Amino acid sequence: WCFHLQKITTIAWSPDDQVIASGGADDSIFLWHLEKKMKRVHYQFAHRGGVVGMTFRKDTPGKLTLVSAGMDSCVVQWDVTADAKEKFS
Image 1 (cartoon, rainbow, N blue to C red):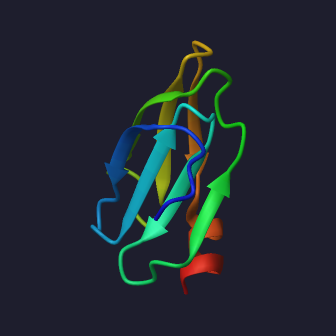
Image 2 (image 1 turned 90 degrees about the vertical axis):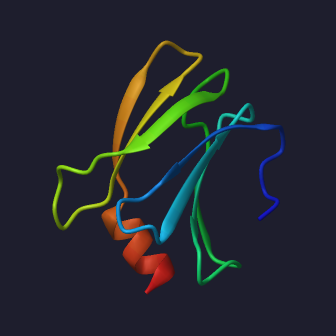
């Protein structure tokens, strides 16, 4: 699980405890599946200046929704359901 180019600044666990999201100073967000360690989803340039916080929403049944905050003063909501299904199924 070594794909960030700079330090990891935040992580979040999905509500089902199967997916971890990591955000870093390299502007990237990665999704990782605990049982499929070599597969990952990469969101490059998620936040200019780096990702500083993330959480998965627990109130979106049937969806995997990630909310991130960055040094660019933006909060972004990501519906990562399709990407996670495609990569981890």
